[in-house]
Length: 504
Image (cartoon, rainbow, N blue to C red; front, side, top):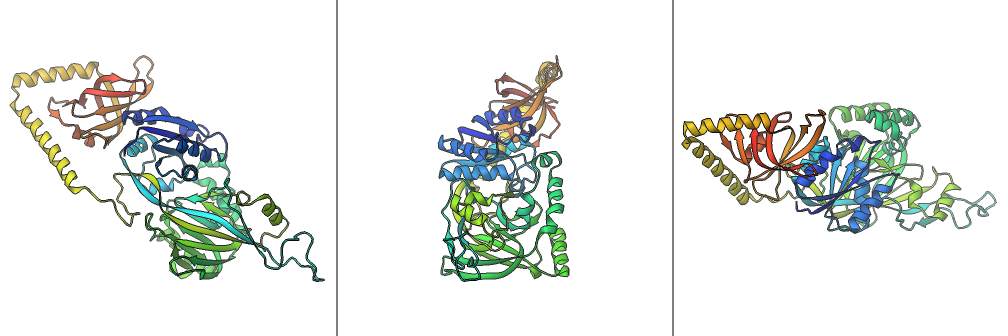
């Protein structure tokens, strides 16, 4: 993934996501990226910061936080029509569903290594807007219209103008019903302290108040103009662009992120037995039970639900008022939200966003898997094998005296060199046979651990403790918690360009 300038948009989470920021920056600097950081200071600012980064032309805009942070970064970039910006993630949230979908490690340093070894891929983005409000009959018993709603007639539909303040895009999923109600009442301080348990506490509080709600789903486009797909009562609706839900359940198990459509799962209202069947299926099978669900898909969908039903995007509740003008808000406040019907429009935006996908990902979410350059891959493997054989033959030809001399040098180097405790390693795809090793060095005078990122390539002499020489490919075998001794100049960012390495 080609990148020169990156912007790291951080949700500090009470300082939790700042602890390893120097470690992360060292890895990104080792990849040759010039990285700036900005910190969210108040709710909603992440979207503004991401929009500014997109406008300034950063190659990569990285959210450091949870799925809510990623959603705001996506919205910020999309609001600036960021076709040239790549969106990335370093997970630092509660559920981290996107990270789980594509295999981004939870540890921020390992996530940074994975980010470096990623591809820029075009993916679909879901778009939602509030299309209209339909008010109930507001006439009084004498047949005269109520003065509270002079513009509303019986069942009159009011079109709603799109707003800029609201989040209109989602990468993972949107939800109507129980999940949005629960997420909307999660205490953030509690969420930062106890993680997913805070969501559980909110669920215990909110679930008794939830009830089935009427919904009508229509499809548009591709010969399905205003076609009614389903009408009835539901307790939960999920509109999926991806598959995982709460990082556990696959609510839309057939979704692809590059097929140009959205997958919809409706959990219908049922009796106590069917409800238990659904809960059992979610817990054991990790997907909804077909007996109490309806499934649809489409590129353009509308859904009409009562205004009292909450909406969430990518696991984060949205505020209905953000989608309404001042006049619409006032009209809604003067009505019973249970009686006012809201029509949402959901659209799939095909391949509208460039996002960093780890090279190690198996492409399960992609209908059109990346085209492997098998020829170049084979060539790379052949080159690596040839180098390893060359090093092996060279070691065999060395005399016993030369080997003894090498062992003496290794011994001295081990005693006096810079010892690095290994955290993780990754290939640097921008350079052939080049790798980045993230680790820590301990300052002898204070015992303080300092982050470093070691760059290893063909110019690095790599020696085993026993004196044999190795190729850079040996980096793939390094284990977390292992040690290596490194010789090379260290930059202010903690980057060491290794001239010599002894693998312990």
